[in-house]
Length: 112
Ligand SMILES: [Zn+2]
Image (tube, rainbow, N blue to C red; front, top):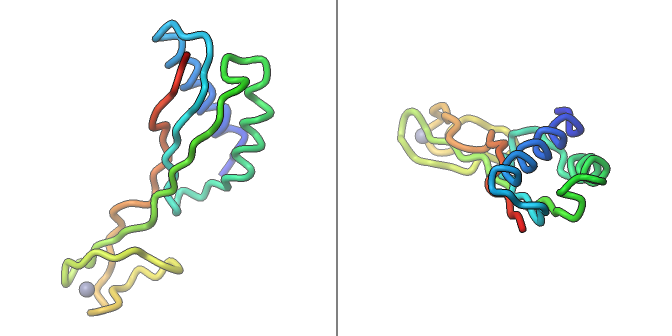
């Protein structure tokens, strides 16, 4: 995952959102990150802090919500939180189908 490119994308989305609502300042950006999205939060925060300088988002904070990996068994239909990337059902050895955990999206942009 290229956190710098991702930070640039997030910043662009935030700026477009702010422009659309005629706001001059972005105070916070909400992000949803799945545990399987492969994003390193520290690297993302670092890149974002560098890129946001001299933009309307200069004082904006990234508010990150982590989404756990959830998967459903294709045999017994039970839903589990996946740990250690084990995609076999702990109860019946069926195969777990991913339901969440790959999320990588801007959830909200707070403007002033
Ligand atoms: Zn099962």
